[in-house]
Image 1 (spheres, protein in one colour):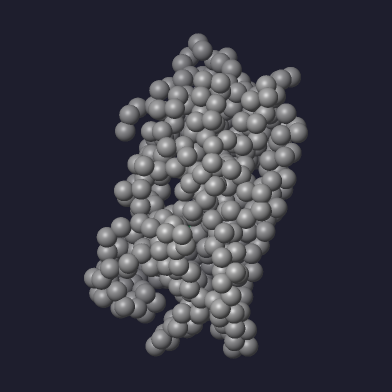
Image 2 (cartoon, rainbow, N blue to C red):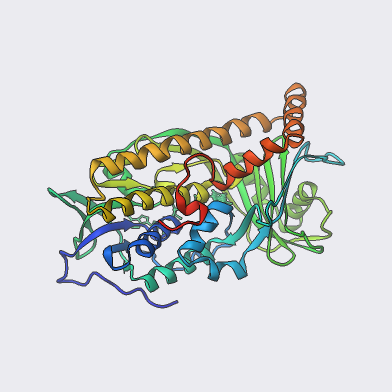
Length: 414
Ligand SMILES: Cc1cc2nc3c(=O)[nH]c(=O)nc-3n(C[C@H](O)[C@H](O)[C@H](O)COP(=O)(O)OP(=O)(O)OC[C@H]3O[C@@H](n4cnc5c(N)ncnc54)[C@H](O)[C@@H]3O)c2cc1C
């Protein structure tokens, strides 16, 4: 990959930008691309990240929903991602025990208007495409940590090694352990789940035909998500202790345990990446804004990966903030003023809290084997399955298209 153009050289420490983004993960880079696509030379954007443009090198796959995909198309990043992404054309949901002989499908979603429900894309492919696009659009980049910030009268100053660029708005896109959130004294609310998500890539003999499956097993959801070729990504929830014990097994025993859940419907399976266990948490920042500061992505929220919505929520933050900043700047107004930041918080905090709590409720309802609860939830799933209008609503919700969604999620220009 092309080396980042380091905008911040010693001696040029007082550069002034419109927006500085701390964090060049998917959220930070996507925001930079949205702003430059809309405003071109009319906006100066700096992205600072010590690991900017580096591959994570891990097999981490994301389900990108339709709305966020349209945003990536709009900023010109999707053309590089699409050839490596796998469309999900069908999603089947089952409820049952790990060792049940059959797990009938309770609820099934299929693509509509010839548009896949989502696409599976690798984390490194997403960031590489966005980074290349950011450079092409003229986003200025610094491979440096934002170690702190300070407020001036009309600007906010970002503290980088050897440089202190200023901007009217600083965006914290610095992930779950956001330093900027802590420095702004924004507390989080939330809890740790007693579960971990085991993530791995599995090769199988037969084609998946773009079908994703979510099995609600007593220990938690077990998702099979199709990847290009005869491979799938799994997110397998177990109690933290069981997840650790599973990872401590030798390869053959681990595979046997996996087979019991994956089943052999796609033929023989092979685990082709090193499985890792990620402890699951729910966190919501008490505020998404502070003076001249906005939080996006994991810096603002971490939700249960049950429906693969974490990155999608991050891109919904991006769509909302980009639209507000662009509107302000086109009017010649200050993008870091209190009013636009409050508009951003109003637009996002409720949506994020509702999605997070929805995932939490689903997880609690399904992660058990209590017979009356199981009967009730299966009834609910079948009811949804037989109600096309409700299914369409759920698909729109997952795509981020419900209500007054930002224009970028409809693929429109801002
Ligand atoms: C098991 C599991 C499965 C998941 N599956 C899905 C899925 O299928 N679909 C989905 O949508 N989401 C999924 N998620 C959620 C997803 O991983 C996150 O929501 C997403 O990565 C958040 O992106 P981000 O850009 O906010 O943060 P990150 O990707 O964490 O990026 C933060 C960036 O900030 C940089 N940084 C950190 N500190 C600083 C600093 N001080 N200064 C400058 N830069 C800094 C870091 O180097 C990094 O590049 C899953 C999560 C888990 C745990």
